[in-house]
Image (cartoon, rainbow, N blue to C red; front, top):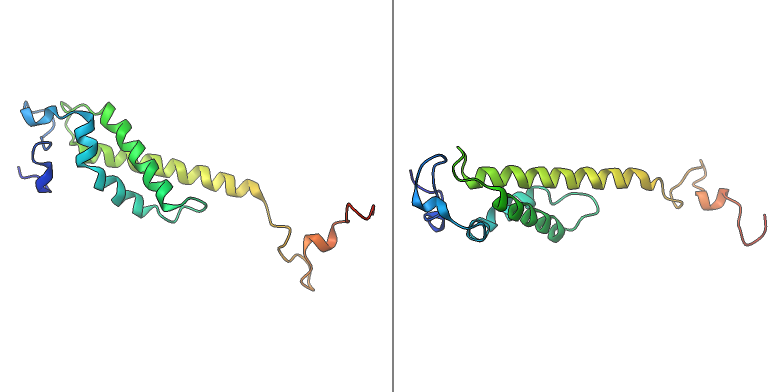
Length: 130
C-alpha cells in the first residue's frame, strides 16, 4: 500500500500487521500528522465565541491524547483514529460553547418595546432610588 503523503512513509502501516514502520513514537505521530489537526480544525472555525487559534489548539491537544492511546496492532491507521478523536473533541467544545451562550440570556441593550425601548429604559434606575 502507498501512503497518502510522502512524509508519512515511515509511519504508514496497515493495522494488525507486523510492519516495523508501525513502531513510531507518539511524538513522531503527532509531528507527522499536525496538518490533519489543522485541516479538521478549519472545518470547525465558526464555533461561536472561540477564536480559530483556540480551535486549532484543542485539535492539537486531542491529537496528542490520541497518539498516547493509539495501538498500531489494531485494525485502523493513525490518521483515522486521530481524526475521530479530534472531531469528538471539537464537537464537545461546540456543545460547551452553545450551552454557555444559551445561559447568557438576552442583552439589556436589545429592543423589547414597540417604540424601540430597551430593558435599560424599562428597569428602574438603582441610583435614583426608584
